[in-house]
Length: 132
Image 1 (cartoon, rainbow, N blue to C red):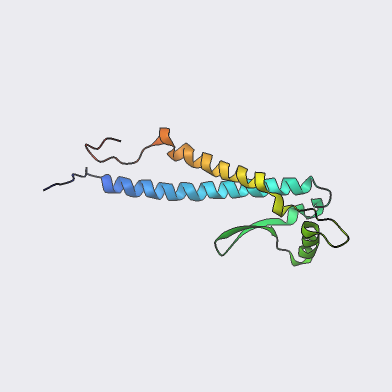
Image 2: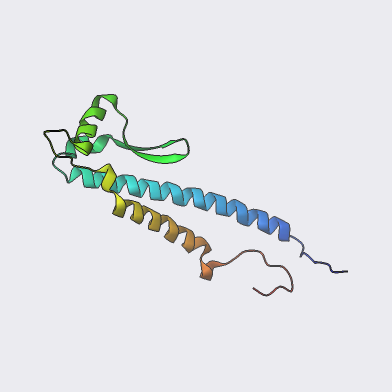
């Protein structure tokens, strides 16, 4: 009959590791979201058409999805006209062209998590006698 020996405190160590992972991932997501928002506002401020709306750009969660846009009802139509244009005015999309800002936010979160849990930071509890 085979058996597995678990070192004393191993379960507690796993629990602490998981709790730390949860806390660190939430913080990394918060930091990446703030960086993303700041970048989008910066892009908007640098654009003549969007600059007057830049300070009204917000990030929020809707049905578990991260959303960036303008929630102020008095400004939504102006932002929509800029984003999609009209038959007489060409569009000046901001929100549909955020590929690099999204990539940068994603890399920021990945880098932060790797700084805690990357290959050189492996501090996960080990099973006695098991090679990792």
